[in-house]
Length: 346
Ligand SMILES: [Zn+2]
Image (cartoon, rainbow, N blue to C red; front, side, top):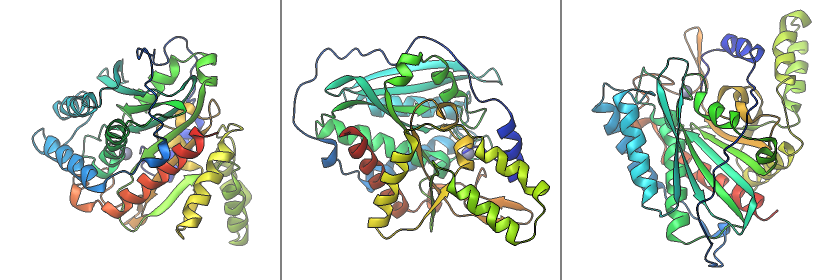
């Protein structure tokens, strides 16, 4: 997750997030799919395996100056660790290198889980780099661990989705949301049309979480406006923020994803918060308005002095494995599987 304050957020909204480009989706190298009849619905992710990955990322940071930032030794060790893990699956794995604004070389890692239908795909992503200030275990080794387990589980159960599922491990989110941008940059119009959904997973280990889901129809912005009016705030003071949120690009397919997540959490009796602002602050940003997008983010916001902290130890050296709640990981994992199942059968 990549914003420090509401102020930074407003500034980020005014800058352009969009690029156009051509060529590469992941070029499928899998020759044929062996029909197994095992559907995505059978996938059950395992928290203990995810926690093992978190411990591995914690060790990587500890052995490499306390962080796993793009271009650092800890970043490179994180890339190697993910590669090692995903190669065990037997799926086609691609490394996509790019350069970020600091001239550091980042490596996106893309795993293809072949489906029956090759024309349309589902893309799931999480960033694996940390900030330079800390090990980035909740932000976002947590999302990375969840996707590593997804790849392992799909492979071990020989799941055959209806549509190919691409699992993306993005680099350099913390530095300019650069990895996912570099990827989207190179997609053609036709390739974008082939993406049924982009599902983003960021900071899913937060204890006592408030579950944020993408607010497709931006109803939360209207609620915010009413609340600020009632509090007597002058329109000129809140209008720029709310206009920024309303101008965040959307896609006609966003709403169905929101409904699917809402139904899942409602059935579990869990409260959610519809949110727009985080969409521009993570790897969802480059995809907005181009493909159907949704995201899973778990916050636990508290004021720390004058600064709003999104989750305990956000972007700090203490973002360590002991702060991660396995139960939160489990909830996020189940929500992700629910989404995949829903989108895959549509
Ligand atoms: Zn972050």
